[in-house]
Image (cartoon, rainbow, N blue to C red):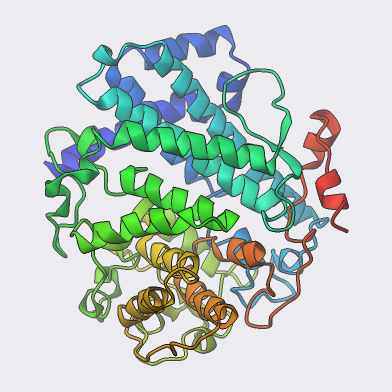
Length: 491
């Protein structure tokens, strides 16, 4: 029964991709043929569902979260890997953004992200013209909230990648916030305006999702190792398969991430709400016996019951294998034993393995082990909420902040108390070490270093505020009348 439903989802995704995502022009040029296709797609509730699945599928493109905004380019910038001189991303690891490969990757990140945002806007504008009674009860608000939050998620990562950090210049006139579908060019906005807009979207999404999202139901807690909380109602996959989609908990976690980026104490409030959901049984920490099997394909490689939001991507293992097969493209961890010095650390023991060519270590999260609990790209995880709450709450309640970091470490197999006299600066250093262990392969660590303005990686490479900003694609500057003064002013 579950296999049949999975096939329905795949068919729905394929329909949307064929109709929409395979051709940017069908959306962005709004040709008559595209209009006919869109009218047909949005003529049933199932068509809207297909469009939602299609947005998630678009996000697994290799130019963004399928590779380069997770374990690829962004983690190369975070200095996670031993990059050889003949590696395709060698110049990227040196922050040489003028290199042809780097330029192409940056341009692809920009274009694919904004194309996916455009798809979100088309869907949202169709929804505005549709009556809620057109859908099963609650589905209108669910789709609206979910897609609004996805649009905010995409914008926020663009902001973190391209704009100066909040701490350096919160008034930088940097990126467009595309909050509607139009053939006109969206003007650049200040970082503070973009943050205000995406917080508004996320607040709205939370209000819409809270009464209808089944991720808040008691049945969402009913999970065990063999049957994690995939869905609460086998008869309605779209409404109940909420565990990895942009659900209420994921939106709350994303708000924690945004406020943390700003250094705002509200980060603690939202992170703590998600942590409380773990205390209440909606999530749970992964146990060592779920990772320690000799048969690697049985390992819970992404610690799935801790995941707030992930992308389903059945091709990730094959894609990773294609990278790992060549020294020019492999993502081999730089000094894994230094990253995970404790022999008791679950992550170092079970979540890094030998690569397919050499004994150099690679992350198992995507490795070609055909993990039964893999095929997903983690986007927001519970451990990040502990790190955010610990840092954001340190000044208000130092004892609680320390206990949160100790709890996270204990659930990774690391013991040892943290001194109650630890300074705020030293505590941030401890959090940064832990973040680096947690975020391997997830594209988050470069943003962590940038937010704090601290040296990057095990070698503590000094990165200037300007270098922390990806440059705008040349076509945007030339044809979109985009100004990069916000970067020039930093030099």
